[in-house]
Every structure is written in structure tokens, then in C-alpha cells.
Length: 202
Length: 206
Length: 169
Image (cartoon, chains in turn cyan, brown, green):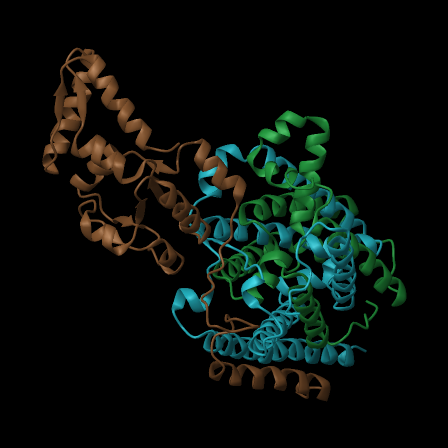
């Protein structure tokens, strides 16, 4: 049977599958070190570019995997829900979210991993996140105009740019690999400086 | 700067997969029994659409549409979803023909206002759901279809003994009607007008 | 500072990508996190003030269908928490700690963590998701809004980070 296999989202089987996928997700996040606020903020202070490497690697592999599974006929990509585009809310929301993330040091998913690892700050972020969502949801009415502006539906880059899917993917891969190259240079330069400093200490 | 071999294998295969990708064609095609049918996946937020209907933000009246057309409303697209022969027989001035089955692949620019119509409004209402599901927000339909256009714009009527406000409103509609080459009429008595309205209403659906 | 033996980021990233791909293949949807918070907020509001919750356009979405508690993301996030715990335990990384710079006060760090979380909540509501739901899932599916959100989020983070530099000294 062509993938996706599980149809509805709320049957007991689907919810159990959700939990199982979540466990794998949590393990992957923890092993990548993203459950550590110190590591996460390192990205934005230029000291530890793990966040970029992990996120972009994940995107690349999922993107390529989905593409080739669809080409092989194993996965029917039109049944995979593409997150919708709302240009203005996602631009504004993104900026706000990023500022909050740099302040908190964790994102919603990683805050759960951090809290589960015993980090008090992880728990604080979790509670703060819940409060923020609750309050925003309660007072969403005056923001309705912004919230519902510039909707574009499930718009993809190849659709928007009117370019072949594979070509856009190649561009993403190229950008990713270039980014990884730069990230490695930055990180190893920093490691070399640290080693020199340690070696030079009396 | 040395990269461990596992990392090199991983990133190397990603690079290869990326390089081969442009030669593969679109991933969005029928996975199983291919008879090349086109699939246009849309996302239906039923609550949102239901709210649009309840708030009456889903339709426009024929008179409103007529005013938009006459005012030269920019980026207005009037879409006739009936069959080609019905369209050829008569269509709203300036309308374009996109039959219902082709609505799925129609593309509208984000700043275009789309007004869909059909004979009685049922197919136009369906087309409205399709267009909204495909992500285009500024979509409306003519709730009572072409019949509403013919009745309210091309041959509007009013009873001679109707109240002053109704008469004033009728004047404006009459002027609009004449611009489209319609024939506004004053009927003798309220009873005649009522009978006329009843006749029209029976032709319409909800 | 003790060295943390984390795995190679590209390998763990690829594994994370495989989890995401598994989600696509098995369930036809991607990962997420903020939705779980939203459905919980909707459910709690409904428990306390049912009519207010039903009237709220944002919460109404989560209250329909099978209710706010039979939510895919809620179960997924429960799994994330469990998986994070198991992995930390297996690697000896379970530790009661408030991560911060050596000279940063504990209270301030906790306050900022909470405040930053609240701001993220606002951003996530506006954008309809967070880094997991939008950036990872939408990024892999080449959604325009996802890439826009990702760039904006990184920009916002780089702009805000210098303000809190003292927290990490």
C-alpha cells in the first residue's frame, strides 16, 4: 500500500504512532545536544554552530528522502500536508519567535527534552511557552487582521518560483553544503584558538 | 580540516542525490495506478469556511457585482463555471469561462478578486469551496447565480406604491441596469410585484 | 567546562531527518510542538470557561473533532519528553541544573527562560507553528512560508541574542 499508511489523526493507532514518532524525535534531539540551552544559544553567539548543522542536515535528508520515495512510487507526496504560507504573520511571528528563542535559549520541542533531562530552565521555557500561547489565544481578536493576512495556502518554492522541484532541491542542497563548509571553518578556527590559549597557559 | 569518513559519506550522498534530482521530474504524480489524472491538493479549514459563510463573506449580490463591473474594479475576475455552450448562449459581460472541472487547475493572482457564478448558484458555491481550499482568499460567488443577475440587474422591478426608500434604491439599480442594456420596470400594484417576486423566488434555491 | 560527548551533528541531523521522513511516510504529516501547547491551552480554557473557549476563534479549532485531548501533536510531544528522558538517562546526561553562564544569577535565568518562552508562544500562534512544525517540516517540503519563517526566526534570534550575552558569561 502506498504511503502514507495511517489515514486519520485521532484513532488509537494513530495516537500511539504519534507517541512512538515523538520518542524517536526526542531521542534524536537529545543526542544532538539540542536539549542544552547553552549549546543552542551558542549558535547565536557564534560559538557553537550545532543548531544550524543539525537542523539543515535534517531538512536535507527528509527533503531528499521524501522526493526519492515519491519518485519511486512508495510515497504519495500529494497526501503529505505542506504547512501553509501566511506571508506577513510568518514573517512577524518568525522574528518574534526568534527573539524569544534567543532569550529563552530553547525552542518548544527542545524545552521538553531539556525539562525531561532535569534542566530547570527547560521547565521554565515550557511553562512560559504555554502561558504565551494561552494569553495570545485569548486576546487574538484584535490581532485577527494581522493573523489572517497574506494567506497563500500550501505554496511551495518550486510552485512560487515556477522552477522544477529537483532544481530547487539542488539549490537547497548546494546552499546547505556551502553552509556546512563555512560552519566547519568557523567552528574549527574557534577550537584551534581555544587549544592555542590552553596550550599557552603557564 | 579533516572530516571523519562517516560524515563525508553522508554529505557526499546528499550532494549526489541533490545533483541527480533535477533530472527526475516532479515528485507530485500518481504513485500507484497511473492514469495521469491531475491531483490538486488543497487544504480545507472547515471552521474557517463555515465562518465565512455565516459572516456572509462568501457571496456577493448581483447588484454589487454589477456595480463593481461598471466601476471598472481593478483585478476583478468574473468566472462562469457552466458548460461552454451555456456560456456561449449568454454570460455576464466581461466574464471568463472556466468549467467546474477545470477550477482545480485555475490559477489566480493573490490580488485578484474572483467572483464565481453558475445557473442557480449551486455549482458556483461548490467552486467557491474549491477555490478557497486551494488557498485563494478573495473569492466570492453569486448566491442565486445567473438568474439573480437576470432578475435583479437586467430586469429589476418595483411596485408603483412601494415606499420612498425602496423607490430611491430602485432608481440606482435602474440606472445600473440600463448601463448593462437591461430593462427596469415599474409594476402596477404591490400584488403584481409580490407575484413577480414569488415567481422568481421559486426558480431559485436556498 | 566538562566536555560533552555529543554525536556528530551531521549524523544526528540525518537521523532527525529520518524521523521526519518516517512521519511523512507513516502518517502523511510532519513533526511539531507548538500545536500541543495550543491544544492544551484550548482544553484547559474549555474546562474553566466552556462558552468563552468555544467562542474563541483560535481555540475553536482544537475543540472540534474528537476534542483537544485526542490530539496528534499532544501525544507526539509526550513521546518527545519520554524520548528525551530516555536518551539523557542512557547517556548519563540526566542532571538537575539551570543552564546559564558561570556568573549569571539563577533567578534571572529562570525569569528570562519563562519570558522568552512566552514570547515564543506569541510568535508560534501568529506563524501557526514553531521550529519543529514549520522550519523542519515545512523546510523539507519546500514551503515558502516555512523558509520565510526560518529566516525571520534566525534573524530575530541574532538580533536579540546580544542583549542577553551576560546570561552566558
